[in-house]
Amino acid sequence: MAGVWSVTDLTTGHPAELRDAVPAPGLSDGYDGPPVEPVTAGSDGVELTRLLALVRLTAPQALEVAAAVLAEAARAEVSDDRGLGGARVAPEQAVVGADGQVVLASAPDGGQSGGAQPPGRTTAALTTVLADLAASARRPGRPVDPRAAQLLAVLDTAATELPDAGVPAVAGRLQEAAVVIDRGAVRTELAALVKAIRQRAGTSAGGAQSSATAGRGAPARRAARGDTRTAVRRIGAWLVSVLLLAAVVTVEVVVLRDDIAADIALLLDAGRSGSPSSSTGAKPDGLPVVPPAPAAAGSVTGVDLRPLTRCAPAAPCTLRLMVRLVPAPEPQTVTWSYRIVDRCTGATTATVPGGTVTVPARGRGAATVGTVALPKLPAVAVVAVTGHPAAAASPPVSAGSCLPARQSG
Image (cartoon, rainbow, N blue to C red; front, side):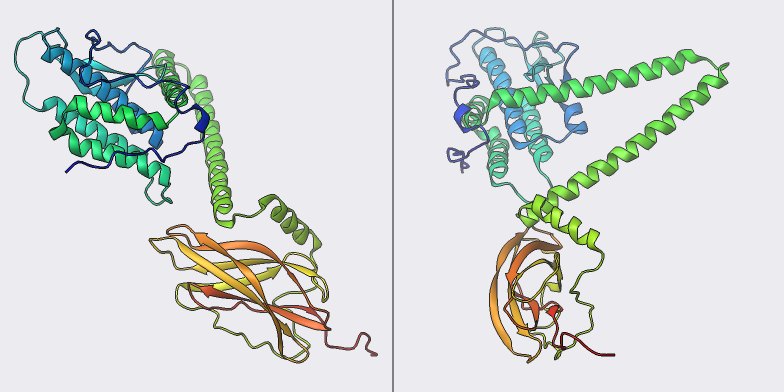
């Protein structure tokens, strides 16, 4: 049964340039153009197998490479079938050039030995290449991007249908699917990857050559190289720390979906004050606040509510809410509201709507910042209560006092 190839509803970050920036190479059913000899990769390219071993591709990059590999293989196959001297190609020896273009090396016999190759050898190799490209673009443990999922589904379908439909037919379908991506930009990205890998290889080779010619009679130089390697390791550890911090910040941006800059300013101000007027650990001077729900329930393992600014009755109170969850394989939706309690009488005076946030799959919780307008009462308490995925309540945040304004000692 044929798979689904339509991706016409897919959008990218360059919608105005999808069809005009870099036209996709045409692949008609007849391939009316002259035979195209497989291009021998120059010294400035990187083998596709090596590229996939060193980096992870994006879904558009994987689709671009797959479309190029199938196009080269299809041209060679059609030329060979017509008796035009097309050489057999080796898809497993595909090379990504310095310009981001993909070329195929000739098979070991170059199509000249006259010996027939095993049936389906090229098709099997192409199927493996398609599967490797799709695997390189998948991100286990991360939220699934719907746009990337559609592109990867195209690659999966191509690998499944290739043995029956044939290389030219599947190559044409991949070219049609690739019109939704900015192929010029993707090739530029691939060229940058190739350049980075080749620079890294050149640096390693240069270092190896220097070590080989240094000789054994230079202890001072060896000590200097040892110091250099130590410095490099320290710099590398620092860079890893920076990358981890960037990753944490990225996750927070995805989960919070708020104005992060304003929230950071509030957190800094709260940290500088050192003496908040209200705290969940402060001794209450009014009636005890009875929580409307347990502290944990279902997949909600805890609810934490803290003030970010000095809170007082009859004024807005800025609060940071954190809901901790049991990780789940699917995204979880968290909803909450705020209960306002008169601490002098114990009565609930109002329920204020909170909000909704979606936690990605395998996420451990969500955090958000909100503002609640406190009523004009001597002393109040605010309690956050989750509604979904389960009902749980935070400890109260208190503001004001039920005691007289002045007390004589």
